[in-house]
Amino acid sequence: MSEAPAASPVLEVAGLCRSFGAVRAVDDVSFTLAAGGSLGIVGESGSGKTTTARIVVGLEQADEGRVLFRGQARTGRVRGRAERLARAREVQMVFQDPYLSLDPRTSVATVLRETLRLHFPGGDHARRIKELLDQVGLGTRAAEALPRELSGGQRQRVAIARALAVEPAVMVLDEAVAALDVSVQAQVLNLLDGIRAETGIGYLFITHDLGVVRCVTDRVVVMRHGRIVEAGATAEVLAAPQHPYTRLLLESVPRPGWDPERIAAARRAL
Image (cartoon, rainbow, N blue to C red; front, side, top):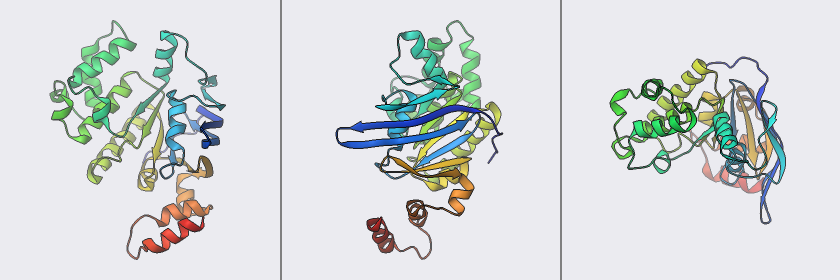
């Protein structure tokens, strides 16, 4: 994995809170993402990690706290089309199932062309589409394909290309490889690592998979019940976790001698 250079934060999250009725989904969450860095937010279903990501991108509004991009606030409602497009060019999101986020009637080239026309009217879109397809390892042969004609891994590469088209400084990947076979996961993760080294983009990985965190992040925060329970350099947290919940996540990964009954008992005791 490529190491990100030390850099000032491109993204700062401070005191983020979000409730749904009586449920505190996100509770006083704070972290920073360095320019060109890769931060993992890990936790089980219901930990608050996806709600946090949606607030960062702007798909949810926080009840309290702030999100700063290069020192400028991203919280608050967007006013007008120009501001909405400007924010989209700062932070892009890639979802778990690209088939649901791609129009099944629209070819790969058309998906990318529509994005480019929206954000960069008047540019050389044909050249840029070729560059994007090459960048994600698809090539021009995939340009006229429909989503149903592509494999899951190829569709996710299209989703990544669409996000890259607006030249964001940060990409949020919400369980972006969870639906893929293990071998395809590795290919996509290697692709993402290469893109980060090439472009200096920052990643915010939302995942329950500690293998993904280990492969592609510099730093990690562990969330449980809406709160961060542990944070630090990825290698250090995974090698010597300090919080019982982090240790439980590591012990829950199947391996020789794995005892699911003991893990279940430990989970109930937390």
